[in-house]
Length: 81
Image 1 (cartoon, rainbow, N blue to C red):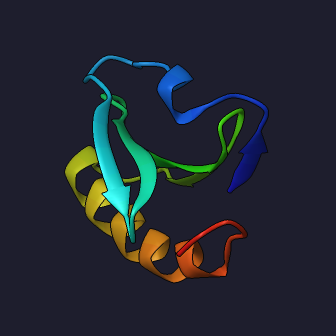
Image 2: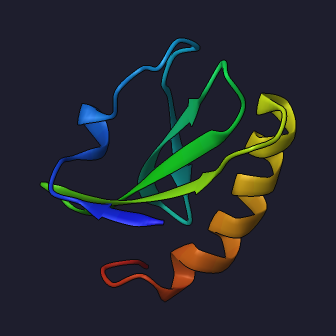
């Protein structure tokens, strides 16, 4: 998990696209990695975000797992609903 001084809209495509998403009404982006792993970027403000990531396993499995982790992390972030 990491905090970035960039918006969710600035999330970088690492080869499999960036999918716009929401978690509990919070702007988010799903960023799958073709080399294995997956990140979900969650908006904190218009210019900052938290990236939640899972690496070291198959991309599809990582994206499923990072969604489960994000469901735990997101309600604890400031600025949510």
